[in-house]
Length: 510
Image 1 (cartoon, one colour):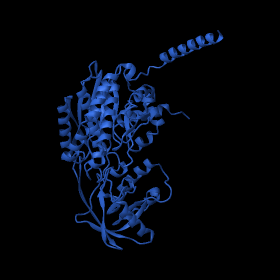
Image 2 (cartoon, rainbow, N blue to C red):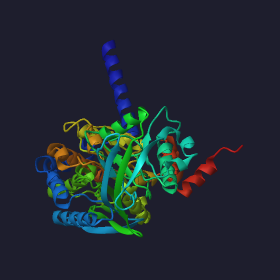
Image 3 (cartoon, helix red, strand yellow):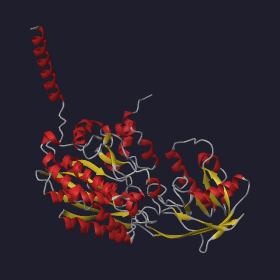
Image 4 (cartoon, rainbow, N blue to C red):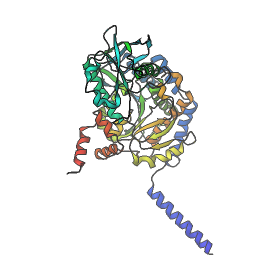
């Protein structure tokens, strides 16, 4: 009898606790919220009949590299609109914005003259200048990235020299501070008459066998002095000569072209309109622009084709979400997230009705985590969705802000800028290099990533409860400071005046 009473009491307690838990938790996944049947259809279309690799093949082989502001980038914009219209998206259009200055790569040649003679392999960094026509000879000198405060006290010694950026000792500043100071050094080196700077991306050596890696050296930053990436093999030889007390002499001929003023670019936009709340919008996409040493397949043809593949899978499933899914292929990401910042500015009046953004831009690997862009309040709501896709693959989540791609402007607007983080160990080789080609992408991985994007997008847009509303500027500032994003944003001049006023207001008085 005692056991029976104990069992009855235990059952009653468990029932009470379950009711309390149900009252307390509103997190429902596809099993409970009615979205699972639609997701099953979308998964079938995405996994069994994916068009994502077809899109990437066309983008890589028929369009090619896509530097923002170039004719090839405009061709990519037209291609993207054509694909969106062909699959039946609504409101397909290009949203124009202006890049502060255009740039075109020319030639980049270098030769070691002494102590031996042989070619050196270089490529110019984006938005950097030229040597005199025909090139110029000069001795090689080094500058220590970790001690630029002292190095910049005597800039005259760089006149007529080719400067090699090295890293000696321990850094005395954060990486972001060093990166910004390198920009100050480059401007000073140009004024001092330096021939060129071997600087790579922030002074680091190139990854991979005989590869260079191009890129820009700041947000919307251009430099008159030629700055180049050199293969690790060639740079290593130069460093060994210097370590032996020798002074290599080199010939550099770098020719690039700037426009005289701003150039036009555009984001590509198309929608699946919501059936109940079309004014509420989830942005889904990647960046369409690329660098120009290869085809731009992994950065970020992968993200663009994922977004198009996701849109196509949803359209072919016949399912229509409660809210609008707006697919956006951003341009200008490589120059400083310019396209996504332009989008947020152009749609400022609508941002209160945005649910967030969902972006893929971390190479060619499988999705391993959804990073919710600082919105720790959404993690419990998102967790059941991860459970629902576990049979496809195990995917984790966190609330990290990804500041290196088009998620950042949305996080700064108080919305979840959701980054689909990927497991891409080979991305360090393909990133901005001549290896960024279609061969680096596996069709099955692309199909799976595109399907996961489609499923996440549809679930967020279709669940009965709205997934997210924007945080207040005050709460957003607190989050960005807590995630240590404020230092980078301030260093690059991206910290809004309104955020600075909030900080000033909240600062303790002495």
